[in-house]
Image 1 (cartoon, rainbow, N blue to C red):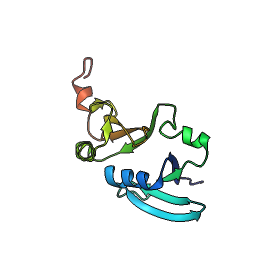
Image 2 (tube, rainbow, N blue to C red):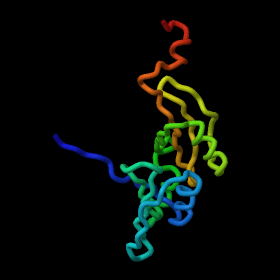
Image 3 (spheres, helix red, strand yellow):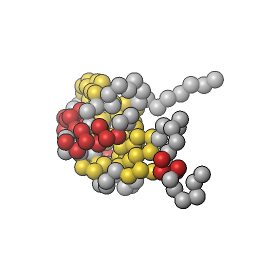
Image 4 (tube, rainbow, N blue to C red):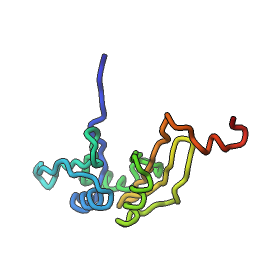
Length: 146
């Protein structure tokens, strides 16, 4: 059987240091690597704490075309989904650190979610999925349930 995983997701940034400051300071991510590659380029990896999988590769724009995509890497759609085991804890911590949320938290069938922006305007979902072993109260109390 083939085993594959996504190793890195590139986020095009204006400046390495401001991006590192946002992801490690505002979001509390761990900095995994920061290696010079020559000609002002760096290999910068960050990831959420406690994660051993996929990292974000922070890549400074090198061309006008790349610079034009900063903050709009998905054409205005949500770019990344940050799963959490404690929505309230992370939502409160992000707000204290100045992360800009575009909406109030909402409860959906799949979990609790709120959209926020990174320092460039890319949209993210902060998302705590419903525990599949626990019934969703919203479903139990909705019209037509039971």
